[in-house]
Amino acid sequence: MRRWRNLDSFSTFLGLIRYVPYVACIVALKIYVMMLLVHSRDATTDYADYDDYVVRQKPTQPSTTTTTHEPGWREKQEILQRLNSTVIIPSATNRTPETIWLFYNRMPRTGGQTMVSLLKSLAKDLDYQHQEHVYRTPWQRLMSEEEQRNLATWFEYNFWPKSYDRFSLFINFTHHRSPYVTLRPAYMTIVRDPVEKFISYFRFKRVDQQRAKMEMTWREREKPGASRKWYWKKLKDCVLGGDPECTLKDDSDDFISAVPFICGQFDYCMKHGNRYALQKAKFHAEFEYSVIGVLEEWNKTISVLEHFIPSFFKGATQRYYSTEFETEKQVNKNPKKYKEESEEVKTALKNRMTVEYEFYEFLKQRLYKQYQSIEDLLRLPTTKLISKSTEDPSFSKWDRLDIELGRNMKP
Ligand SMILES: *[C@@H]1O[C@H](CO)[C@@H](O)[C@H](O)[C@H]1NC(C)=O
Ligand SMILES: *[C@@H]1O[C@H](CO)[C@@H](O)[C@H](O)[C@H]1NC(C)=O
Ligand SMILES: *[C@@H]1O[C@H](CO)[C@@H](O)[C@H](O)[C@H]1NC(C)=O
Image (cartoon, rainbow, N blue to C red; front, side, top):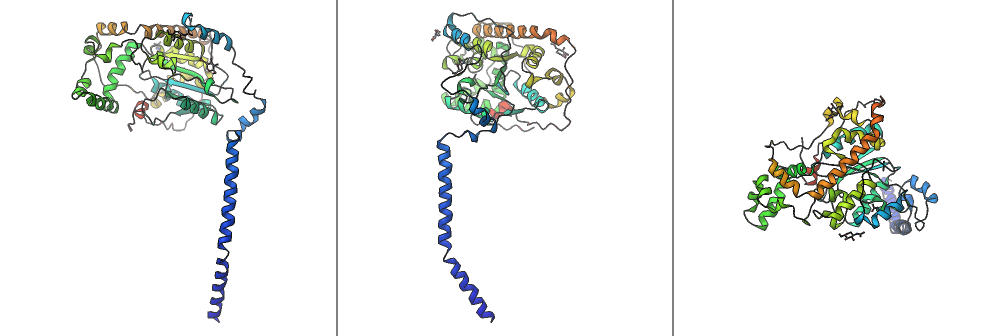
């Protein structure tokens, strides 16, 4: 009896196995049809991939052929046409557009780490997200058109308030944004006295191990024995001895000054002493940037940021001087102690940076004017205390420059 039963279930099983190929065929066909559908959706641009917000906005957006320009576009175009012969005067005008994004294109050795800590601290209370750039390729400041467009798309992808910082030359987001998007980020950055920055960078290149190793390997390959000489080079000998690292010849490549960073993604922007680059940088500074802070004027910088970009910096001064921030703050300071450089060295350097200084003075003037315009406001007992959330601030202990150099410096 038992035996017979077993036989029966076995034959049932065998009977079922016959259908397996048919079932497999049907499943495969279904998958194939689904793939076809997905692909046809890709072929016709479907904005549903983005966000509800965009979908809702889409019907009311102007079509791409009838472009609407931001206010003041025509005047700006006219100035751009005759940029070479125009004197640009800094003003206190607030250039912050209606926006939910902030782009901070930071520069090396200008207090960027501190500013990023401040942004991250304020983000929790002001309801935005600060996104750090993940550096995959070192020192990528000059970007291809496609990379710039990808960055613009990244901002658009999720329509929520966010700020983003990166070592990057100025990017025209208006140019790279998608046709159905009307926002661009507010732009900000910080500059520093050019000679001080040059000296700081000269030292930091050698103190930062990864950075030093990269440069030494490269120099050793060019000329055996050159790497140690480079490593032990004194700034004084470099500046006064006519070393190419410190001569700052016109048209030599410049990757650290404020002019290229604010001038933008053009070859002439990175040529030391280029006056057209200076004009372009002044133009962007005056007409595009909300705030360009000055490291030497830190208090004014935070006050102006607070009033010119309130959605990202409201309460910044108070936060900066609060005891909580002391624990959150990260600074990327060179731990080594140095003797003050002589006036002779500084003057020699300064004489090689006339374009840089013209720009630095221009930016200082603009910051002063902006500060003056809010001075009356500052006297009023206004700033409401922001309640600081009590949760434990979990800050990434990554040093940004180290990330850029691929070094993981754990605390
Ligand atoms: C300004 O001068 C530079 C070279 O000095 C030139 O390349 C550029 O085309 C000029 N720009 C305009 C708008 O005239
Ligand atoms: C940015 O791009 C837009 C669109 O192409 C253009 O109208 C505008 O003049 C550009 N702005 C600057 C400062 O070059
Ligand atoms: C900056 O502001 C802080 C706090 O208000 C103050 O203690 C400090 O003296 C100011 N620094 C300068 C240079 O004015």
